[in-house]
Structures are given as C-alpha cells and as structure tokens.
Length: 309
Image 1: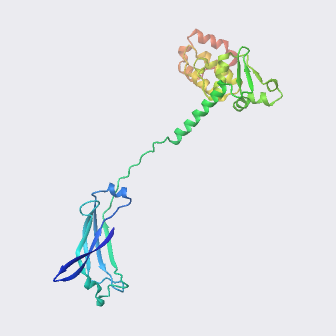
Image 2 (image 1 turned 180 degrees about the vertical axis):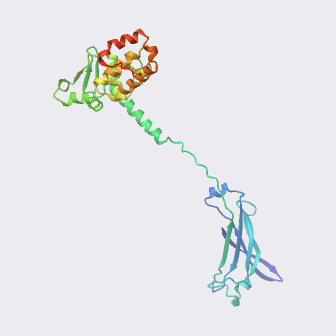
Image 3 (image 1 turned 90 degrees about the vertical axis):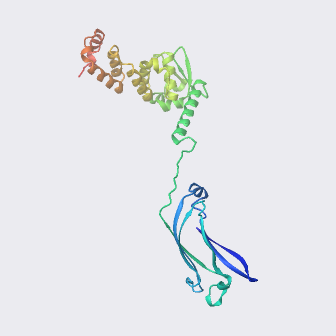
C-alpha cells in the first residue's frame, strides 16, 4: 500500500487557497506478475490516517480519519482519498505545531481483513529429467564400447575360435571376467601371445559373448541362449549367465523341461533351476507319462537331478 499526497490550488475572492488532498492507493501485491494474476480481487481494509504534531502525536483537531474501504486490484476501486483534507493556512499555523523543519508527518494505520489467495501452477521444465540424462549417458557409453569392439579400435588381444578371430581389449575382458583377468595377469600363454583360444564354441556364440561382455546385450541370445549360458559359466560372466537363465526359462515347455533342468543343474544356474522345478512339480503327473521325460530321468538318474518333490 502507498499514500500519495497532491496539492490542489483554487482561487476565491481574489485570494489563493491551497488545499492538501490525501489519497491511499493500492499499488502492488507481491511481484508485478502476481499482481496481474489477482486483477479484480477485492481487498477489505480498515485504516486510520492522522497528521502528527511536533511531539509525534496525532492532531485530532486538524484531521483524523477512520474508514472502511474495499480496494480492488487493478480495478476501479484501487484508491481512496479526500480532495480537501486541510488548507495550507491551517497546516502552517504556528499554534498547531504541524510543520517541523519544513516537514509534515502523516501517520497511517492499515488493517487487511480476510485472506488473499493466489493460485500457483507448477510445471516441469522442458529439459530432460535426471533419470533421462543418466539413460542417455549410459546409451552413449554402450554405443561407444560397441564401436570399439566392432571397429577394432586400439585393440591389444585376439580371441580365436580356430576359424574366426575377434579383436578385443585386455582391460575390458579382464574387468568383466575373472577368468580372462587370470589369463592376462598370470604367467600363461594368453599373456605372452595376446591370443585367447576358444575352440569349444562356434563363432556365433563367441561373438555373442563378446557383444554382451562389452555392451550388456546381444541379439544372439534369442536363438543361442543355452550355449551362451554354458560359455558364461566357463568364463564367469554373471550378467550374461543371468540373462541366459531368463531367456531359456521363457521357452520352457513340457517337451524340453527335462533337458533344461539338466542344463540348469550341470551349469549351476539357480534361477533357471528353481523355475524348472516349479514347472515340473506343477505338471508332474502328465510329465511322468511322457517317454521323453522318462528317458531323461533314466539318463541322469545317477546325478540326482530328477528327484522331484
């Protein structure tokens, strides 16, 4: 709130009279934007305006006004005032002690009743969230590592299947596999020749293993999950192994339950093993009537794999 003084001049009987006018005007609520949002909102007020004497006390004989007024934000009732408060002659009258050091003090007390509420809308910045930024960074890292493998960027080791060779990086192989790390750290032939021989798996499986080792994913898993599980077990690749367990489990059926249980038990795949055992227990009666399942039970009887609870 702000009080504005203005001086109005009028002429009467060839004499100049100065009349002091006082106006109380609503200026702003909060920020200019906040004021604009509240356009037309009524503000109920009580106020008292006085002219102070030289002792700082209200001079009630000259002027003291008590009013109620509803101001309107940016509306027709945004101000209140009186055109004739006091004449200049009364103001400078020495007996009234209103002017001290060429200064007149006006005292205004204002009370606002009720509440002023403003609706605040929150919105999300158009930029990506922290999770989205993190995912973008991870995707870029995966793509960079995929390119390092596929384009043989600064490679220092060869992985050979006997028919095909793949260029790779000792640091990445060692970081991802304790078996590879032991090959390159110990006094072993792989360290001296910078070559790893993998002859018990075909090219597609070895390529799929390397892709997953570099990027955490491979399309080979769709058709070669069982072989990838085996190579993951051999080279201690826990991430690939777990992905293969779920991929194999997705294709579990009555026709391959025995085969998959044998795979899970012989290659230490606990997730897959638990899934197959639940499946067999649920379909026990039907499976025990199937010759293929009976043949598998007989073939692995000495291992205890097919002890069904």
